[in-house]
Length: 630
Image 1 (cartoon, rainbow, N blue to C red):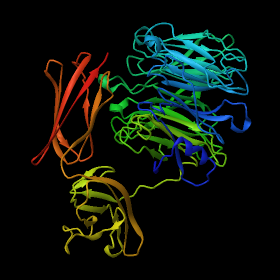
Image 2 (image 1 turned 30 degrees about the vertical axis):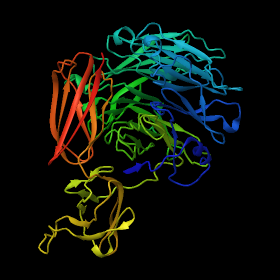
Image 3 (image 1 turned 90 degrees about the horizontal axis):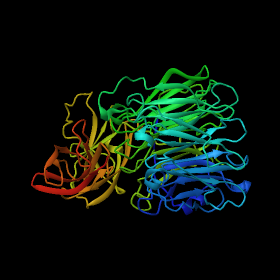
Image 4 (image 1 turned 180 degrees about the horizontal axis):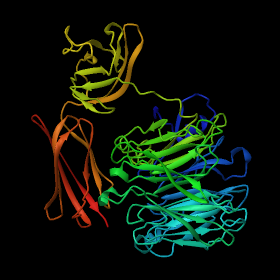
């Protein structure tokens, strides 16, 4: 298993200049420039839009207030967003292959917040003279429909040679939801040819849509619809077969197999993300991947289902998140990331590693299994890297497609401006994890964690021994003295951890970089490490924020302490009545307080919090507010 990290990100301008670069391991990005632009909320992979064959394939990256484009050999650009767009613009986005032309694609972008939640979808047709303006606009039926929350190329459902567009409206009729299908053709119509309705309130039918391929081999494309609130809250999917005239023929309902809910906050959300019509394991049978990002306290799961008998088999493979709130399964994509002849699976886990996020890769082909092959990690807390994932072909020298992953809360260009990152080569070029750990004053030191300005560092190996004379350890490029740990005297048992400590002079406040390479007596490398930490002279509470805010149900207070400190968090209503309290010991790094109510949820409205922390004689406080909505 390999772990990758994003080491640097370049601006849009630099990105195209580097597109012909053959250097392995090069990472690039498209970054937002405006606060809360949320670039990377959705990524549309390779899209044929323009007339020129040399630059016809574009990467389209969608944010809440922009559509960014990148194309080989040309400058970065943008596509105009329609007037009246809301902050929900880009909640759904997809390319439709051959929607209005056999030689060009279309891009559909949903705005479910438009017109009091009625929703709208803007469709951009590629072709000669492409001007970056919507060619066709679709709207929902009623306020609250959330039309456009999901859009997808559903394949050619009626056999006319043009692919068709599916649009989800999961808010209709108290969350019953519906999906409308619009047929492609030389002059696509704004009138839906098919509407498939959900079953019950709170189904959220139409949250996700995907092409399923021709499951029943009748020559017409089939598609799959996700209803993560269906089946009494556990989630379900619906397989719909295409046919002439494209009536909605419901053929199979597949519900989550993990059993009934144990409590409200543990909803699996099975069907919240879908990926269909792909053969990932190389057996010649179409596969369907279903995300359940809410399962197991938000750890999340993804499930691989096979085509069988013209529908979906009940034999499942399970892929899982590791820790609570990982959100594993929030996004899904497939592409030949490593071998051009095999399709690999990418799964987004935007909550992993304290919200830094990750894209987890599973290599395809006959060796495909449920064990992850590569973790591509986001770099900063709460960037939500992996909110979206996609495959794109932008670099002509690259032997395979590039993995693209969105981090809509990244701060590279401006606060929460967002970014989309992608590789110029397969992500097998990576940094391997090591068994070397670093402690500061007895606490495991994590990247970007805090220490005192006079820290006591210790470096520990899980096994083996260290040759002190050849150890190479630097802080900010300055070599450090390495000595034996005080607890490892001459009588230390042979099975004890191999550990050394550093004699560190007083550090200035601010970030520092520690690098270490340790050898054994045979001069073989036994451990390496590289991380950035932050020295602080006093206790402070830094960067407190509630995520999300406004919140519908559960939320988190995220804050950083510069010392290991006792803290207490209190939440008050507008009358000053305390409604929530939690006390704990915080770490000198990012800390999270979960604000969730399994019962007796407070009424919608505004609430205020007070956070107090203490370390020896030092004190620090922070205050803020939380808005709860229905």
